[in-house]
Amino acid sequence: MLDNAAAYEKAAETLETREAAAQKAGSKGEDPEQLLKREHPGIILGVNTEAFSQGLKISHGKSRSALAKAAVRHGMTLGELAAKLHKAVGRRVPLSSLSQAHSGARPVRRDVAEAVERLIKLPATKTNWPRGIRDDE
Image (cartoon, rainbow, N blue to C red; front, side, top):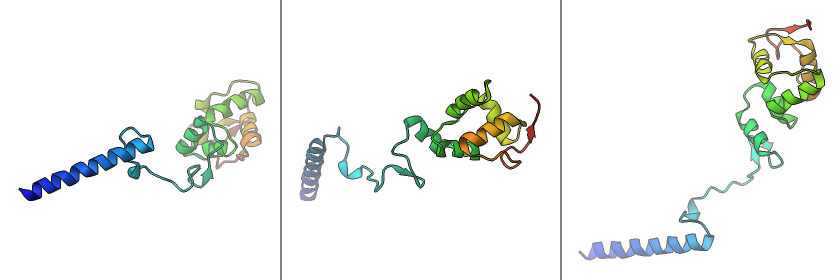
């Protein structure tokens, strides 16, 4: 019986200590000792993302293809790249056709491939556009 009372008092004392620490830290009941502290919070996968917008951070985290990674390196999401291609080429370039051309599902037009090369330095080669580059307008 004495052991249970001592254990109960110790548990109550620990709970009071944690509640006091949580109030002092300004949190809402979270244990401040359990919060993750990173040494360099802006560096993700070796890239300093502190200056990135939220959309660019999301694009950086989701980018798998060389096209997406090159766009992020130049500070653009794929949607922003498609908008800049619209201005560079003079006509709308759907993001879906750009992704399909890069993945090898369809060929890409030469003017689009050259504009991508100018904007994000992704060479217009067979490696980056597996189905080829077509010359037709």
